[in-house]
Length: 143
Image (spheres, helix red, strand yellow):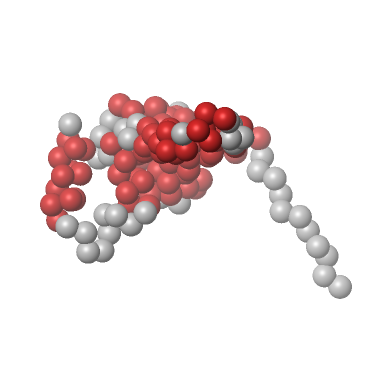
C-alpha cells in the first residue's frame, strides 16, 4: 500500500532568498547591460553566494526567464482586475487592444536585458535568424 505524500511547501527562508535574488536581478537589469548581468553581480547585490543563484534557478537563463515571468504575471494580474469591457472599450476596441499591447511592450522594453530575454524565450534569436538582427541587438546592448 503506497502512502500518498503531499509536496512540501518551500521554507519561508528559501522563498525570501529567492525573492531577494529576483529583486536584485530586476534592479540590475535596469542599470546594466546583459553582459554585466552576471551571477557574481546579482549575488553581490542580493547578499547571497553565487551558488545560491544556481541552486534556485539552475543557470542564468533560468533566473532571467523567472525575472521576465514575474513581470508578465504582474501584467496579467492587472489585466485580470480590469478584464471587464467598458462602454469605451466597446466603442473603440482597437484602442483597447492597443492599450493592452502597449502595456506588454512596456514590460518587454523596460531594459535591454528584458528585451533580450523575451526574444530568446520566444526563439527570435535562435535558429535561422538574420545575423544582422543579432548584430543590431548586440549594438543596443552596448548602449
